[in-house]
Length: 470
Image 1 (tube, rainbow, N blue to C red):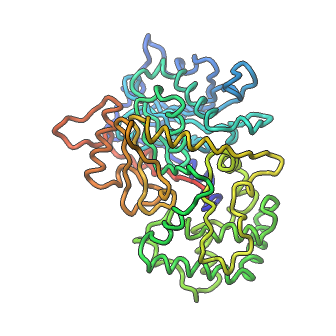
Image 2 (tube, helix red, strand yellow):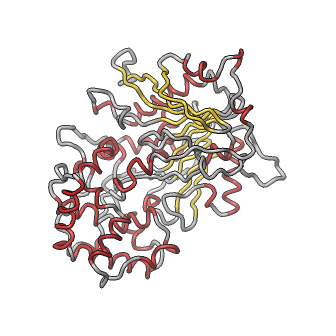
Image 3 (spheres, one colour):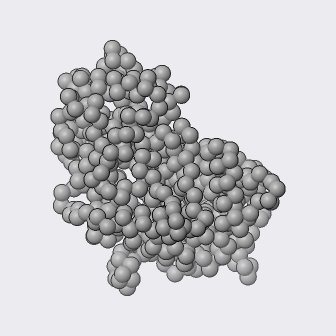
């Protein structure tokens, strides 16, 4: 579970309002057809209600609730309120359908496809992430088909307003979500951009991750990371009491994991993974402490990379829906570094079942990811996968083959879990951008280098902080 609570919602839910260079506020806030204000048209959708509207120069930004069936197979049964947001530019622009796969940001932000196509953006909170959770929660209704059906209903409801092309997107678990949505509702979207989305087809087979950590980056950096991580384990007798004292002062508990010693191991064994997932070798490997560093230095570095609070109840609980899905359909890498075999005390602890309350059943569906993989590999169309060359989650990527149409897989050299189109090589960036513009029906001129259609804005275009928890 790398870096879970450390970033929690303060980093997943990104903050800020913005002004967009070159945008026409008058055009962006244009009235809908028939003279109706866009807010009135959105709120006229059955089941839609307003939480708040926030000011954004050049856009209208709405945070909303949309009433959804708990079980889409029984649409007249129980319902729940699912949060969505709409960053409205104009009804004559394409629309990007974004989800992080987790919580919803209540602050305006443009995903990379939205920046490129200069479109509207609809964002969805994934079902069972609070507050978008049925009460009482029937966890058997948290699966990839139900979530895809949430997106399908939202798209169907808003397509009457936003009638131009639609592009689905997301990063990390959001990239997985965008992919699953296309598999179950392939005709909803005109294209999909899935960033750093892992593809765990055989849940019990994790050799790709072992090969990754043997080869990623330089040997010098790998050795330095492994040495620092191992030294943290060597000082368990100092680290665990420190963790207990810190947790007591902060009001954190370890009921789900069992105790502070297990929580220490859970976090410490993900430090190397967390480094490669979120950090860059060229910028930060020299900052990795040596084995003779002080305990204070090792503690601080471990907290920066992995976040000691990630092993607490308070760090785990917001992500219960993810762990449930990892243990029932998505799969998870049960990777345990061989360099820690002599100091690990709880082998097999870092599995999804550890993080989910024991009263929630977790039967595993072995067919779910095989079905997704087969569809992507042989039937998908207008799909774009972007991976990071140094991202652990890229060890098991999606691939496209015979039978697919206009489907592409690109890797950004040396990039981590923040890989995007902008980080691709020049040729790949141009090809990916051209494909996206074509799908959105705002195709670049044939003789021009394809490029984004918006001016960069430091607030609206903040990088997405992507979380995926091994």
